[in-house]
Amino acid sequence: MSVNLDYLDPALLPLEEKVEAYLSAKEDLQKAIVAAHTREGQPVPEEFEQRSAAGSFDQQADEVENAVENLQADLAILRREIIGMLPVRDEWVKVNLGYGPSRVGAFRNEKKPLPEGEDEYILRVVQ
Image 1 (tube, rainbow, N blue to C red):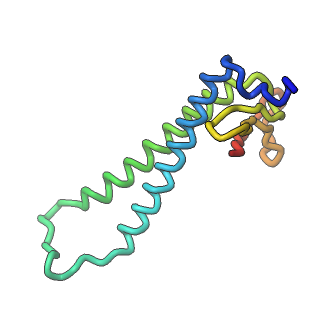
Image 2: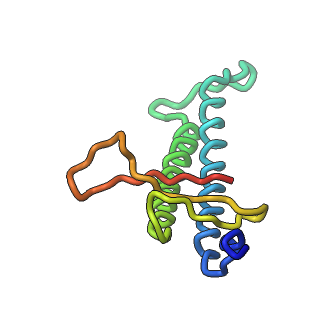
């Protein structure tokens, strides 16, 4: 019975917090990407359209693009931190994300060959 409750181990709390931050950042990135694509395809009503000054640029589009890039960088950092915190590779670790046992794991990327001794790991989270 204790094996089924391993995900409640207090030692896993830092990992759980990182995974929750990762999932939140991933959701924010998806929203930012949707906002960027929505903005690109949305025409400006003629009554609000203004001519831009010579040499000016669409500042809001740059801000959205920068937000997406920043979120992608944050996700990469969180991914590396989580993979570093995992006790094992190529196996699932049970964690408590608030609604029963969830799983997180780092699995070797077999599709991308790297020089011998180097491995690329893919982070997977199952809620």
